[in-house]
Image (cartoon, rainbow, N blue to C red; front, side, top):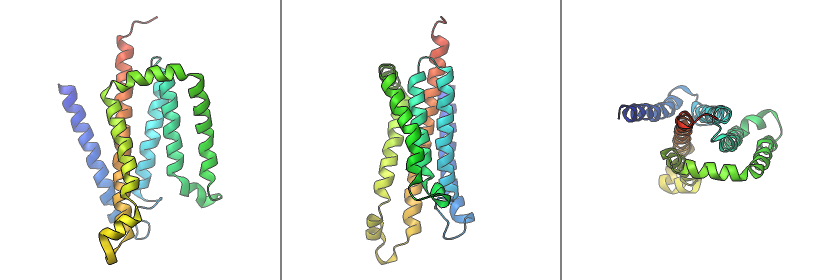
Length: 204
């Protein structure tokens, strides 16, 4: 019971930190750069994706039971990280260069998945029976919602003649940040679940 309460407190603090990042953005980032690719919100989104990728890569090394699934998930998060920083790449390189960078882990992940598809499928089924899987799906759903919620046409209707792009960006990026936070929580739950299973399994 104490473990559940501790996790609840940690996750509430994590969500509160997300809200603070959005507030810091408007307080400390110069107008014109707020909620852009170079603001606190985008930086935090990249950090969440990077941490998720690293945790999954570590899990792939340590967890025999979920090794193949962890590799595929780590590569998927890394592709999202590259996509999240598309404008950073395009700032110094040609437009659309991020697609070529993303293609490397994407192709490697596709080949790896096909080679280990049976193991990945079995591990995914086991993961789907955990609470972390539900959180992962929730985070993904929130990401999809952020794209739909952030459509300019919708916000132009809401604000009418008083349309302000910064409001639209704040809403869209804030929801996206929440979704990525939920996905990090899911990764943490997945890693701890794998570690707990590893301790219970008999050593060979």
